[in-house]
Amino acid sequence: MTKVSRYGIGPRRDKAPRKKDFFQGIENELSEGIELSSVRNSVDSILRLQSDNGAFIASPDFAEYHYSWLRDGSFCAYALDRADEHEASRRFHSWVNAAVGGISGIIDDVIGRHERGEKLDPSHMPPARFGLDGSTVTDEWPNFQIDGYGTWLWSLGQHLLITGQDGVPAEFLASVERVGRYLASFALSPCYDVWEESGSALHTSTLACVYGGLTTAARLLNDVQLLERALAVKERVRASAAQLGIYAKSNENADVDASALWLSTPFRVVEPTDRSYVRTVASIEEQLSLVGGIRRYPTDIYYGSGAWPVLTASLGWHYLTVGDLEGARRCHEWISERFDEEGRLGEQFGGELRDAPHFREWVDRWGPPARDLTWSHAMYVVLSIALESFDGSDEGGVIFPLIGDSDADARGLGA
Ligand code: BGC
Image 1 (cartoon, helix red, strand yellow):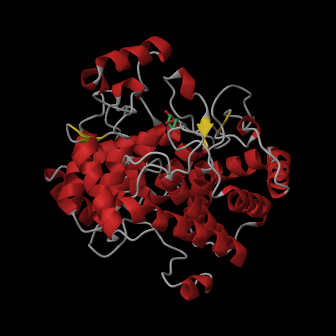
Image 2 (spheres, helix red, strand yellow):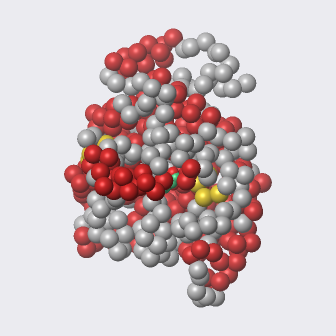
Image 3 (tube, helix red, strand yellow):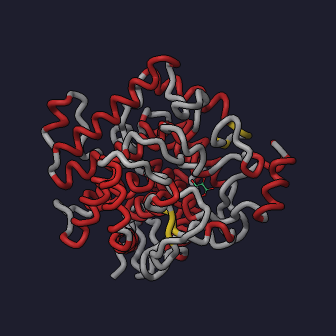
């Protein structure tokens, strides 16, 4: 039987009676801007956009996105776990498990070559996205992006914690070990970033995702070497702020990038109160706000660089972790107003006015921007549920399995 969400946002396929007290509370919340119907719609959208085998299509209406990305999908699975849709989340993890199994030879091969100091061609690296059937796609896409592998391990770890499973289920063990080794090996190697650009740099948000993956794998496998590697990544991130006083986009670009928000929530490679991080958030607010939403980075030109629900939700999520309920509500409201009459939530908004020539350039190339982006729904769900359950004491819903600021504490593996 499908479980009714604790937050009342599940699809309610079992027609279970509503909990009176809870909805009383929600009615109060509604008057302050939380649209429960949109949250439920978003959970249903994610489920609708999931294939039977567990893959999530990135967007059904945008041909270039007819694939399943590790990055997008891992956040979608996390959103489903927050919405008590654990079985669907599990199916995504099983799908990744099978996809990783299908490229086990490639992963083992590149780790071996890297250890022998051989030069590697980025186009031969494990992919960022797969066909919905889990197959690899041979094309020109800038595939070497390690963040998705980190985010997947993190998301799997959250799934296991949320569902009360102590260890790695046997069928996932080989993939967790393999992806952990892959991340440990390439953690500090330049690769394409979360926006699939700039393949020659070390990117801050990629490092955050890798840290999230390595700490998760270290705890799940009780592996001190993976933890040592995570701590090296953390050190690299910290050191990167020394000169500029902010966490810049990459070692090649001193701008801010809104994906740096993930440094703290959810991956907690830095504390939300870290001074350089606080300055980074202030720069993101100042430089990347567009009519209330958040853009990717200052020189972005993709579809004129509109504001993204994914990033606006990430900022709202951060606000909650520092107790700024009003800020979180503003972000939530901005996204709530972006659903179309069919309940779709696009990738980005406002680029056509902000930078019309580049907007048109991309429309000519690939058609209008994605009107329904699965990952947008996911981050909306994450922010909505964190808002609904906010009581000033949790960490935006993220469970931190292995965070200890002193190395000794962290080396306690799971302490
Ligand atoms: C974004 C990626 C995303 C992909 C699919 C790209 O435009 O830059 O971060 O994974 O779309 O949604």
